[in-house]
Image 1 (tube, rainbow over the protein chains, first blue to last red):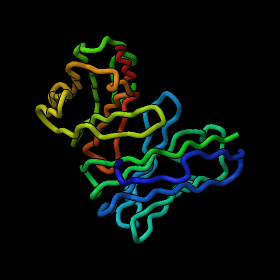
Image 2 (image 1 turned 120 degrees about the vertical axis):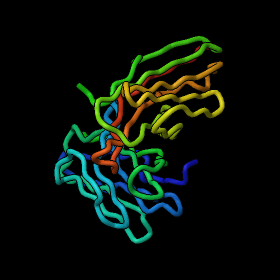
Image 3 (image 1 turned 60 degrees about the vertical axis):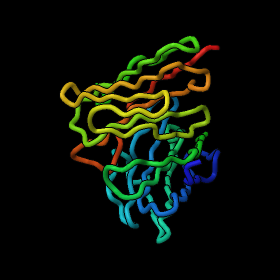
Image 4 (image 1 turned 120 degrees about the horizontal axis):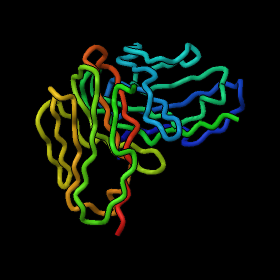
Length: 113
Length: 110
């Protein structure tokens, strides 16, 4: 148990819809990173939030957006869902931004039909 | 070419065998991570290292910064070690992210 919880665990959405995924970070951690893992591939970095501000972003379109709350929990929002958005979405929390160990949640499996 | 390459992609071995998984990377890094992913998705961090060698139980991780290469070794392998092992790096120029390899699927047979 890492103390990082993600919800929901599984989700099915229709193409064009919007989705919000949630992540509660481990106690004391102020940094949350989001990753997308397509089937059979390694995770791809979406973005990182540090103290409620976006601290870095990977190569994802603007329809992927995020938020971090004062308690350091975080949301990942995806608008105008596409079939290729079907993936496991992983959240990782860490003590600080930069070179620190990351603790991962169990992930949210999103299927877009 | 991917910035982080792992080999082998798949590995099946008998219980008790010594296992080696390799990772090569092409970018300058601040740290290299070895992680374990079980079916269902959960990821556990095994090691974070920037030089030398680290050991935890039956797991050993080594890194050669000059050669941009790391290895993960498992001694006395056990069926419960079966998982996907992923190498990831923290790039020097963007240390907010991890760049991941595709993973090595390890199956240990009793």
